[in-house]
Image (tube, rainbow, N blue to C red; front, side):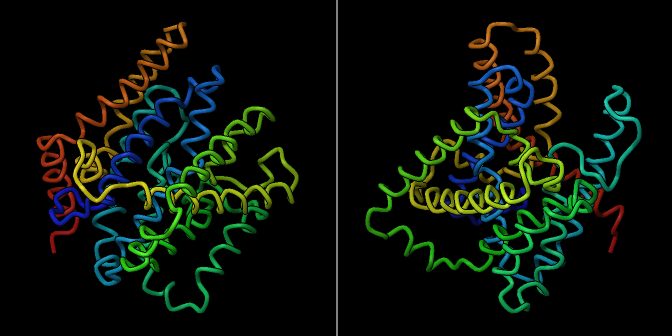
Length: 330
């Protein structure tokens, strides 16, 4: 996710991020609905198979300026994370959802901000490590065997999603152009989507836990055997990168109505939980599953539309800059 006020854009990636940020919001809107409805669970699992892998790949792709990435890590990600996580913890504490304020356990969606801070802070040193991309896969696959990696400081997700971030960093614009010129690329992309739909159906048929897709816990917390966890993790990495390929191939490098959403992902990501939570709570009283699901989809679209408005993004940007300047005046 890029800074709110950035003006130089690439419509190819704006369009990808525009679709992905809608899926992020919809995925969070389905958090409770999927517990009681198979269609909701199917959609939820399908979204979680690829939306954050592709998003994080793009985040790495736009982190190629190492000095800028490191120097902006605190201002762009750590300070907003600390402020919003504190606000969210106070709200959840007041509602009785948690028993204590948590600073280093990211609340709900805020893990991404913390992970981005760590990745960008360490990136200039990580890229100096020999075969770092291969090593990141090995660590991502086998770190789940250690119970110390969990939600604390988002360690499990920091390691689990790192390969996507590094792969994005190492992918050049020339490589993107080559991918978009490959023969049979659209046919392969259609097959990838079909495999994703099949995987989501498999998840439902065998009643696998969608939490396996979160990458926020050790293998010991999952019902699968250790070798089944490793195998599923390898499969999810392969599918995640396959969807990166599909999005690069199928996205168009020209403006669409959702291109603006891709240009305003930071404001949408930071604020959507404060609108989605009431939407989820309000729709819990609706017992018609078709109407319930329709309202969640419509509400997600409305949230993305509202939070991508110029007034919202400019106000948020000014507020964040004032807070950051107050904390870091120099």
